[in-house]
Image (cartoon, rainbow, N blue to C red; front, side):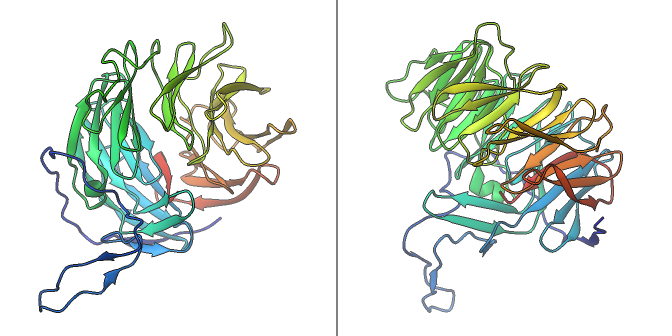
Length: 401
């Protein structure tokens, strides 16, 4: 087991700004040069490097960290590269949590808290930027309950499905420690997709502009029918909203298409996948997992011996799918061959399973053992290491992806 080193993060002033009038520019600008203005002494500043982000350093590889919150609200970040743990400011004891790969969002029944893990990746298709900055607790938003978060380069959306309400935040400001709200939308699913928003409401899926208004040529009562929208994810091929009988996928052209499940099939109500991949996974009741290929517009059922309580798609060449079953075991399914591998029980079956994954590893938070288990899913579900934390994690994210 790895015994982490612990240090205290430097104190920071946390501010929460008023509602902004519009969206800020993206986190990065892929132009050949971004030249700063004259400096205070009258000399000309040197050109900022390509992909420059204020307050962050750029790296040659993902700066992967594990961000965890305990039942009493103590918050830590474990750097997987340096094998070092940083303590952050405490937050309210969380009832719910969600992540977008940089920010961990926790909530009680009354308040929602945003924590910046300080590591993220920007994928521009033909090249990728990896960034690191100081992790910190950013601020809070009034209102709580179960929560979802999704981000593009310019927008972060936070949705409370049970309340049917979502907010749009300025992503660049959020990265600088300010919570700037730019829009509110009545929706159970709210996804940022480029400069658009994709909203799931009680009657369907709507495509909106960045301030929550219908886009030109789109009807106000829904771009596509979708009964009981629940669960959403943004993939490389489109924005996915789960529906009672399948899903709606909004493509890069802003046009929606419906992908129906087989008649009588039990629907997934949440989706998970490795960042930026087109195929996503969701629970298929007690039968196993559904795989939705958002590019091809097709479903595939992957059945399991035991019911799964969490599942995510790696979407690699071997089509690995990683889940946690009702016995607390990590289950690795290789959809291309049908092979199945499992660990010994790593979690108390009564624990809320917390699963994250990247291209090489899966991470499973173990509250009863105050650990995070790292599983090599491509090597027969081998537990590569167990990382000791300073407190039992009840909210958890892998950031830097």
